[in-house]
Image 1 (cartoon, each protein chain N blue to C red):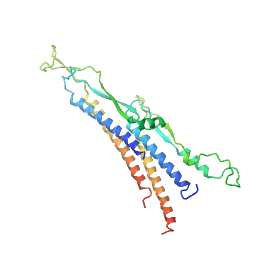
Image 2: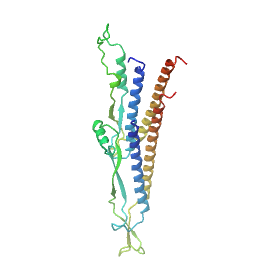
Image 3: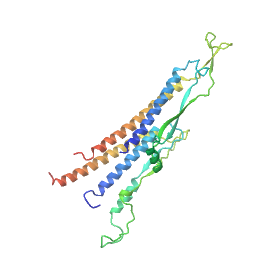
Length: 137
Length: 147
């Protein structure tokens, strides 16, 4: 946490990473629209990331020394893992394929927009740093 | 950068659909063919798709073992020949007619072929859309840190 790259940059970086992985899986789903028996996949990470943010809040125990433990129970952001799941499709096809193309395209678009937003935010973070480094010039 | 994985998954989908279009075009083109190298009228063909991990280079193999949840590519597993019996059409003047004047014609339903062709086209377009989404994301990633 120390230094100029604070927790927000780590958080944005991890989100970008997961979004790019999710894009890989969703593209694979679209490619396999007509493969018999193929099961659609998705990546879940938002809950895990949210949980990891707790690592930055003070723990339940008071500390009077930097090497004291404060009783926090959270994975650091940089170690958060995403989970691959099989996306449920209520209207399954006869051939065992569970890709719902409308839903996959919507997820793909959502993922793309979120990725762009995250990219914008991280750019802005760097811009702030630049302003500080140049003393507001 | 890991965008190449998504791009190659999308392109595997595109090439599989294009292969399917070729087969469907051949079915339509041969709707009236009564002579084939294997003898008899033309038999309708169909493609079989399978989901497989990417091309089997050493790196891909390693990656598939480390991350078994990665995206799967589409592969054309084979072309099957439809088992439907040929249609008998009464046409005594046809050179391939039998003693009773019937010709064995391919059992091809143009409607069915056209529907499959449309499906292949739409699937191809969906893959193009997914590919473009990946491309936009990759370009956005390059913009990080730009003043």
